[in-house]
Image (cartoon, rainbow, N blue to C red):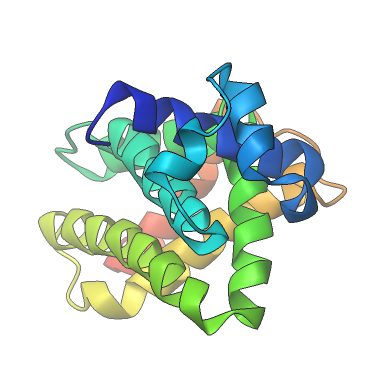
Length: 185
């Protein structure tokens, strides 16, 4: 985000979306959640679409902070994936729930779809870079498998009946998946 105030607005929007769904997201509600003077949010994000796009951009920015871990080999990658996923269903739970709300809304609003897809491409590009570094023959082809596995685990932990997985369980699953994707046994 360009400024601490924009980050604060983005964080407040994410909190509101996760807690109340998209119906609870209003400019005034974000002002209250962020403890900003009335009108602050609408100054930075004039429309609802602009506010939703700001929330998505903030999510991507926050995810980047958790993806910055250097990866030297498959074990490092498995640990990094486990750390990211574990964060997504524990401390980052709010952001993950908000992302699911936005994903569903993006299926109904093409103008939001573009912003949502940009964020998704960013994550997929990072995953492809990691797979390339690990020596995957077709990293682009395996990104869908890796991202799909991560999404399934997170959804099951937050909205399904799976409960919260341990970091060790996630690392073991990620190692197994990477061995399959990289063609190792």
